[in-house]
Image (tube, rainbow, N blue to C red; front, side, top):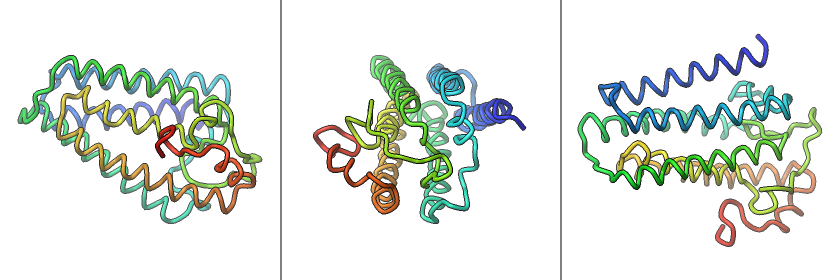
Length: 227
C-alpha cells in the first residue's frame, strides 16, 4: 500500500471512529458542536497533511508507521495505548455530557473561542511539522535518517512545540464541544503529555548528540518563561 493510500485509509478510519464515539454517545447527529469539531480537526489535519506531503514526504512516510515499533521504549508503548484509551473515553464523556444528559451548559462565545484556539493550535502544528523532519509519532532516535537536533523556528522558543500545541488543542476541543466535564478530563490528557515530555527528554539527552547543549540554550519545554 502506498503512503497516500495509507494516509487516506487512516483519515477515513479515524473520522469514522471519532464520529461513532461522539455522536454515538450523544445519541443524535443533531449536534452543531460535534460537527464543528469534526470539521476543525479533519480540516486542519488535512491541511497539515497536504503541506507535509508536498514539502517532506519522508516525514509523512515516517508518521504512517505503526505506533508500536521494535526500537521504541516499553514505557512509550504503554503510554500510547493508555492515551488512546483515555482519548476515546474523553470523546464518549463529552457526547454524554454536552448532548445526551446535558450536564453542561456552555455559552456560545466560549465555544467560539475554543474554535479559534483549535485553529491556532493547527497553525502551530503546521509550523512544527514543516520545521522538524524527524517528528516521528514514537520516541526513538532515527539513526537511519540522520537524526539531529532541530533548534530553529518554534524549537527556538520551546523544546517541544508539538506538545505545546496539543496542550492548547485538547482543552479548546472541550470548549467547542460544549463540555465542562470534558474540559476537566482534558487536564488528565495534558498531564500525560507533560509526563511524556519529561520521559522523552531523558531519552534525547542520553542518546541524541547535541541535545544537552540545545536544552541549556532553549530553557523551556512547553510554555515560554514558565516550564
